Image (cartoon, rainbow, N blue to C red):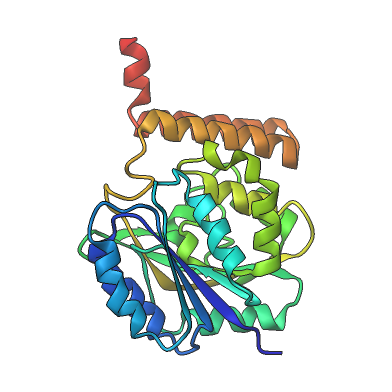
Amino acid sequence: MKLSVGVVVPNYNYARHLPDRLQSISSQTRPVQRLVFLDDASTDDSWAVAEPLLAALACPVDMRRNPRNSGSVLRQWQEGASLLDTDLVWLAEADDSADPSMIARLASLLEDDSDAIFAFCDSMAVGPEGQRLAEDGKDYAAALDDHGLSRDGSFLVKEFLTRFLSPRNLVVSASAVLWRRSALMAALAAVRGEMKLWHCAGDWRVYAEACGGAGRVIYLATPLNLHRRHAASVTGSVPAARRFAEVVAMLVFLRRRVGATLERDTVMRDHLATLRRHWGLDTLTDQG
């Protein structure tokens, strides 16, 4: 059965990236059935840029603008997904882009496996002007000596949670994920009371919640998503100490969810030590 696809575009001050993002949606070889554009009280000209571009799309469009910034991308996700009635949901961050075949290929995988809660593809990292960066999702995964994402795969959710969401989130871009809407809504409902607490690790928390039940996650190793790295991104704008605190909170949650072992605790401690060095937090501690 062919499943319907809806897309949510959460935006905050990404006017310069909206033409590329919306073009990448309209050029999908498998058209989306509905689009929800959510502007989180942008202070640039995002709304003026988006209006004519959205008006030119072939699918129905719902435009919403918050009078005040929500402070939470998860609230944007929840609002957008609740406005859709499609079988599948693509959370297309406004500063990212996609290969024209991405949705067709991911949707086909979900149609072939009714137990899959979401499917995602590898991402190519690009800079502010779209230049390709050396980092890619496979290298990020292989850094933990697990090459399970070096090729296409299908994983039971418990295995995916243990291997690819602990001690770090290997779903490197939310825009690379196509969700079964029922699974997304259930995960968002479960974390609703926590949404204001997560500034940069909220996506990780949602994936972990979704993988707490039954089902599978499907991975496509082809990099069909373009994930933009820049200082104005949500993660880039959060202070390192705050990012570190959210990683610690996630590891505490994962330790409870997957169970504590000596090996797992060692991997988590080593990962935290690496982050402290990488983010310069050891220096701050020494100075204090």
